[in-house]
Length: 360
Image (tube, rainbow, N blue to C red; front, side, top):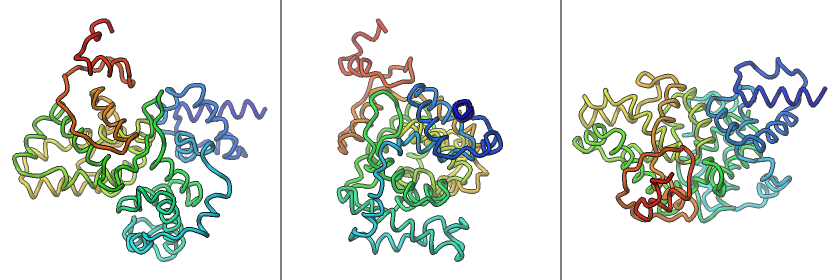
């Protein structure tokens, strides 16, 4: 009986059905659901990530995110509590200043009834992280990422810490385009941020050249708006409902998914942008939170999935993630992707001038 229930949980979560699982399988504990979904993700990893993009049932979203981040395998029991009582972070005064700025309109952070406990949990997560990762340190934007994880998890502080740690430091998965550590968005010199700026600029030249030319014509540089999109992974700029679904996509596609969402947003606001001057364009890019200029989240993700990513550009992004280094991105041959998955052999062929691609 239990095995049939677990099988049903796997099927429902993996297929992204909209019904609440609590009604379908009453009494099933979250741990059983997580174990079942881990088995499904190990057996059908590509299907799991496709279904994560489609969107898990809200009641089991946090379970799906934990599986995507491999929290059960990475979590060390008791370690967080130990670090919480022993850390001494020089960044604590800076972190403290940002607590009131984190989701001030969300009731769990902005309401005095809850904000004390919420901000204490957020401070703990950030302080422990930077104490353990001094090479990354603390930078504004991290507070929104950690705060968002607290909200989605139902304010499970320890689980949110391990999720935050995984998002920042995960090693690259050789077999799937999935979550890579994005700590380079915040570490000294902002290596990943600079790399993604360049990659998006080249992607816009191919996909939205009119938008790229317009932003250049009105002298609206990417660093004035794009850096905040990237460093907060859209959490300060999109409506909460869009953020939840965009993060489903991010956890399935990794850092390359962030770039695709950027292109998708720009495509959907392009008509309004093209008829605006510098000040108007800046306001449009800065104020998307009311959602008036955006499509529904599903349409935003559907558009992102159609954005083609040059394989060599993706390879460069992976190298930046792996090495926390940035180099100039060379001009690349315009070769359209025939497969969506990362292909090392194709990368080798492109580096050699395209030889061997004809046989593929």
